[in-house]
Length: 358
Image (cartoon, rainbow, N blue to C red; front, side, top):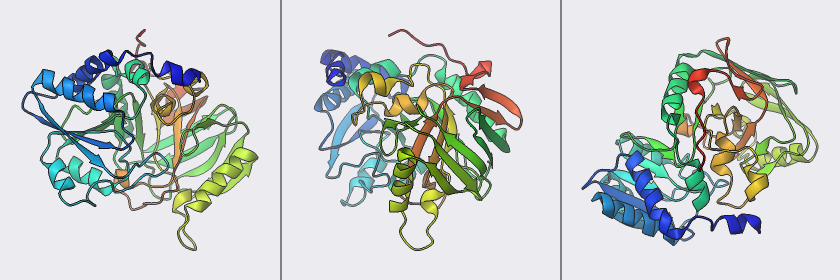
């Protein structure tokens, strides 16, 4: 109940100012066209705030409401393109403001390749205010992005027993700092993290997921007992533990589409969080509803974001829905031997961003 009460703490009249600030961060200019992609579950006050923000700037704006409601457990749902003319309309816009999760869908790559900005908004009103990109986050993310691009070998360790090795460079590095401010950029309001996909077959070692680590996909819950994963040739070959291990194993097995299908067990995007506005304890504080904790849990500074399944967002061929996202605490990350995160704390000063009191 507390989470529901807190979601009303932002005065609805304040939303228009928040959206105006976000549009400014996204470099929305007069006479540009903003296309809203909503669904039947989108908050109407968000639509109204977006219209008000665009009107203040002098930009054109319209809404396209789709008849599907994709979510984190249904990544890759083709919301655009099934109805004639929808993709063509979006291709004529300058920025798309989308209120559900378009990740791993083919149309997203199409519009990005055509230099259209895509801003995703999926969090609760007070989370949008708290997590909105602070000064310095973009610069820290760009620095981390360039550092990750130069990296060949990554090692992740923890006192709990994690010792994961993987190579990178086959797929592009992706960074998010909360604003779609450049042509062809996709970003999510409230995030701040870096990731890429490991080279095929290069990942090997052990990953130990501890109590307090967070499964944000598909369950949005804190891990309560240890999960030990064995990684060989880029795939999970063993999942050991109690209830949480069973949940993980059965979810990934459900994503298997044919005999011998290993795609759900492949390692997906791997990276770390940078947004100082994000909190590890957000689920405990504010609940685990659909609008809660997704950005905060993925992006709190110093987490190692472990995931499995699809890699089409990076240009790969895996389209499986067997996707698992786990921000892990207390890990150390080395890039070609350079320590950037130690026991869950960012130690590279160029990646440290001051937190704003809001």
